[in-house]
Structures are given as C-alpha cells and as structure tokens.
Image (cartoon, rainbow, N blue to C red; front, side, top):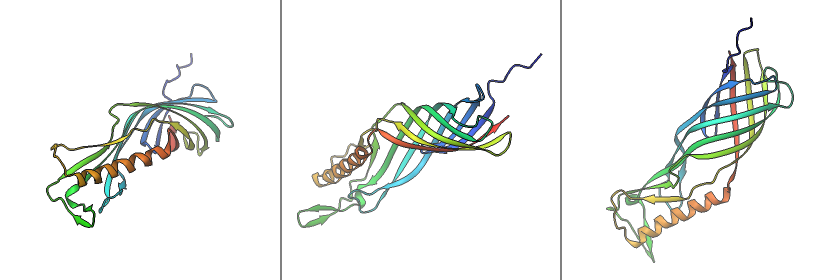
Length: 211
C-alpha cells in the first residue's frame, strides 16, 4: 500500500521588500503549488532629510504571515517554467525616525537660532495593527536539480499606506519655530507617501528545497 502524501513537500527561503521569508511548500498538483509561512525585517533602510541639518535614519520593521497560490503556465512545480502567483499577507509594516531637535537650526525672519533644550521627538507611521495585503505576480522558476530551484517574481500589491505623525514622550511645549520645523517634516513625509499611491510594486527572490 502506498504511503500517504506529506502535507509539506519542501521549504522556501526568500527575500522581498518586506524582508526575509520562510515558507512551507505544498505541491497540490504538478501545476499548482501553495506556500505559507512568515516574513520578518527590522533595520535602517534610508534617511529622513526634509528640512533637517543632519539626516535621521529611518527604522523599518516588517513582520507577519503570508499565503500564496502559484500556478505554472509552462513547466511544473518540479521543472523550469513561468508561473503566476496570487499572494495574501497579514503584515505589520512600520517606519519611525528619531529627530534630535537640539541639533537643528531654525529660521526666524533674518535670524538663525537653535533650541538646545528641545530634546528629541519620534516621527512614525500611524498604523498600529496588521494589514491585509493582496498581491499578484508573474515569475520564473529555474530548476537546478530534483530538490533545488531558484525563483524570481515581480508584480503589484495593494496596501493602504499610513500617514506620518510625531510624538514627544516628555510632552514638551516647543516654541512656534520648532513646531514649524516639525510640521514641515511631517507634511513633506506625507506628500512623499501620497505620491506612491496604494498600488505598490513587489519583487521576490527565493530558493526552494524539496524534501
């Protein structure tokens, strides 16, 4: 009697704009494949520069669960070929940056001054929960051996980008010229996010190891 088919046929290790991915693979048929797992990233990705004397590093964190259905157009789950992929992520994506207001300069008419007692504030995205992010991609799988393959895919995902706000843990009442500087940073940050819209590119590189 034949042994029952295992639910997990392999493991996928990959990287995308959401960070590192670890997924389990289930080959439901020769042409169909399901993956499920999680992604994670935490680190500096860029700098916040709007109206600032010294750029402030942006800390980006990403974590959550992901599910994907892959359908091979040519080839199969065990051979090289083109595929389409429908994905669904349940993700927490956050960005933040610490600005040292005491190191900035502020313009008042013809004067340039500082605020040595102003301390620091955190500029951050307003999202506080996980988001459901659907995606559609086209990709190619290169099969190197019976148990090992490389995949690349690119497409679009829908994500409702959050607004940027700021917080001050000391509840300090800043002078108006400091508020003007903060407002400029927040306003320009939100304008930059609005330019991207809610349809955002996605790309993923991964390797598959079949058991």
